[in-house]
Length: 188
Image 1 (cartoon, rainbow, N blue to C red):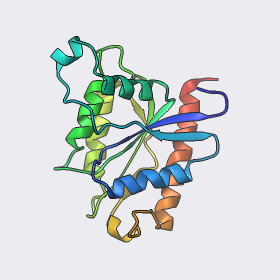
Image 2 (image 1 turned 60 degrees about the horizontal axis):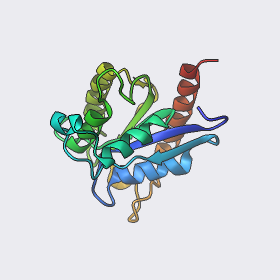
Image 3 (image 1 turned 90 degrees about the vertical axis):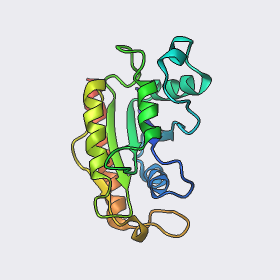
Image 4 (image 1 turned 120 degrees about the vertical axis):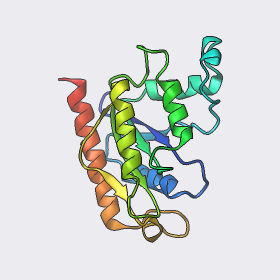
């Protein structure tokens, strides 16, 4: 950890321009506590994970992904929910980041998860599935608070900015908890 500043690598599971989850990440960046820096690690251009490709050496996009996560003290995952799970593009990024086995840049990282959806579940099933994936990767997500943004169309303006005060407060609490968890796991 850098002296006095927690670096948080954000993985955004939505590729759509103007998505609610993109707005949610922007909101988190605006609400981050002093002493925390959230930066997005792009996953859009990653090739599909393929062990043959991995054996030939990580492509530049994969090296960039791993470097972005490696330099982070913690991870923030912002994800929509597709078919009761996380989007394939996010799973693909996690698959690349988890390699090589036993030397993953994800190993031991503190993490926080949040997501937004137009419906009433607010990505809770996707987040639960992501927590299951994190178990095998030894990623350490915080348990509370959980941020499930429901009925997102009512919580963002037409520019895609988060305008809902209760949701902003939930994000502040999530980031404060991530900060405390990261400091706790980093030791004295």
